[in-house]
Image (cartoon, rainbow, N blue to C red):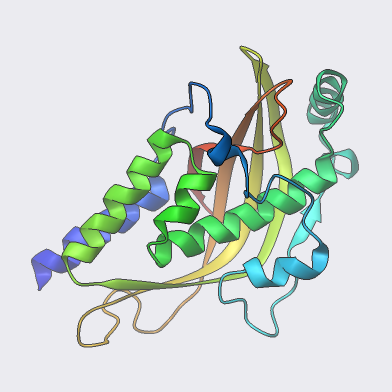
Length: 222
């Protein structure tokens, strides 16, 4: 059991602490461009359905537009991106990015490969899929609860005709790994942990698609 515990713990830490995990490259198929949460603005009323096990008393996600934050360089970069891509709307992007954040974490916890493939670049998807496979081989399942998500645009880059927007997410997360007997061996007290994540989304400038893919993640101790 100790071997199984450390194998799963290592897999979880690997997932939470991995740094830059590759960049999506190559043309996207039409089927991959459709039906993603970035294809159109998400109504506020539908966001509650995307929150992972959001507790009834938890606050709604706090969306902070860089235009209202003290980030002069970021504001300039956002304006530069808007000049290149008139369709870029930072408040809408933040709403969709926050939904992507919760949906991706939920998809990882429930081994929903279909959702992960739609929202992740191929390289990032392989990392998630490997961690899920390791968990399933040990007959384990994961429950994840997210509370009080705070999101703001952290950085904007334009390179090789691709826009990259890095979003800072601050959240409280309760992650529980459950064994075959139905017991949690990694978080029996069900503690929630503050998390600070930097997720980078990418989209070709001038593309007809409004879809952004997650191409990099970084996690820091909050």
